[in-house]
Every structure is written in structure tokens, then in C-alpha cells.
Length: 283
Image 1 (cartoon, helix red, strand yellow):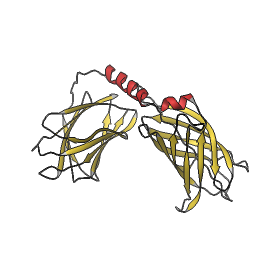
Image 2 (image 1 turned 90 degrees about the vertical axis):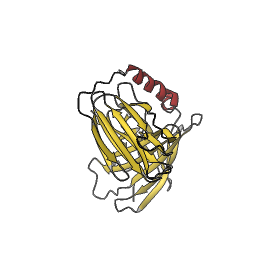
Image 3 (image 1 turned 180 degrees about the horizontal axis):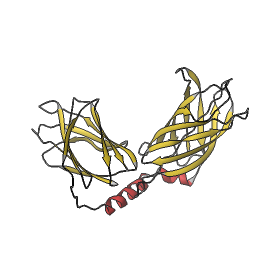
Image 4 (image 1 turned 135 degrees about the vertical axis):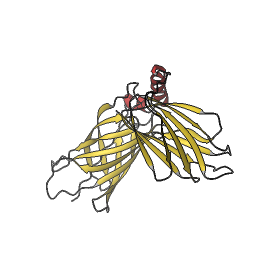
């Protein structure tokens, strides 16, 4: 007999100090064969990234503990979860079924967060499916209100000192599709400038930061478009997606990042539909 287990996590708005928040959540998992299991989720949230584990009490007394990763999408009101690996020791006859789930948030529903899951064993064969649910909770409602995130981001930006003191030489590099550049960061806020530093020919770009579009199909000009980003602790991701390539392909965007003490000049070039990625590790 195979046992199915799932766990999922909530993302909370980024705090002005960039610290991860910890939560414990109790709910139910309904397997398609008719079985229902209680489970407990213990996790921490940083930005829109989910990391943690689940503790599930199965009918035979086995309590698997499994690591999870996931993302929250506040504008679309959903959470995606992926089980990664078993953490604790279990009986030899125990069959692992790692699950992926998409959970939808509905503020007025009894089960405020619910959705379906699908399981794969370690050989990537299908091993089950079912549904997950959490009952109504005001705390969950608050987590999914976009204005809460905006308010906290604005507070962090307001506290950021606008004066940039460059104490290290400017670093310059290029990025393109399939190439990711990793930077080390100090402050909790980043200033990003994007513009067309060459021939202004109508290039369009979409800039995504930690899963949220900051600019969508933005047409580049000589004038620098400035954005201020709130950096969570750990890994942050900036993705530059090429749109229209202009009259002189490929699509080229000039980007400047300030870390108060450092300055990075970056040129992103791609064909339409391709993307370049920068990962920033805030210490």
C-alpha cells in the first residue's frame, strides 16, 4: 500500500527588515482513493519563496517528514508547492510519493486555501492524486492582500538612504539567454536603472523581480527608468525578458544596479521571448 503525503506553505509580505517569518499550519489531505490524513506544516517564508517541511501522521503510525520548496503569487491568488526529499528515517517498506500542488486562495470560502495535488515516485512514475484544504483564517486572508505587501515595501524604501556611496570599482558584464550572473549584496534595498545605451530602436523588455513583473513590455529610451527593489535575505532574482527587438536586433537593454557601496553595469541581449537572469544573494 502506498501512502500519500503533502505539505504546503504560505508566503507573507516581505518585512522591512528582510527577515523570514516562521509558521505552523494544520490541515487535511484527501487522497483520491478515499483516505484522509491530518498533516502539519512547519515553514519559513522569505520574500515570495517557501521553504520548510511537513509532518504527516499516517494510519499505520508512520510520521514522514519531507522538505518542500514553493512560490507564492499574490496577484493571481495562488501558491505552488513541490516536495523535494525525505528528511527522517522511515520503515524499509515505505513507498515515497513526492507531490506537486497548486493551491488557490478564496477569501470568502470555508476552505480559504485549497487545490489539487499530483504525486510522482522516485522513478518519476505517477503514484496518486487528491486534494488539499485549509479552513477559513483571518491570518491567511491578510497574507494574500496585495496592499499589505505594498505598504511594507514602501516603508522599507522610505527608510533607504538615497545617497549612494560607491567605494569599490564599477563592475561591468553581459548576460544573455542561458547565462545567469550571481552577485553578493549587503543592503536591503537595490536601485535598478534600465535604458537603451546604444541605438534607440524600440526595444521592449519585461523586468520581473522575485516573481512579480515590475515593468511589462516597457519600451527603452535614452532616459533611465529607475526602480527601487526591496531585497529579502538570501537569494533574489531579477529576470529581463526580451520583447520586441526593435529595428536593429537583437533586443538590448542596459541596466545599472547600485548596492550603495557597489555599482554594476550590465548589458542584457536576447532574441524576442528569451530571458537573462541575475541572482542576488543578500547576506
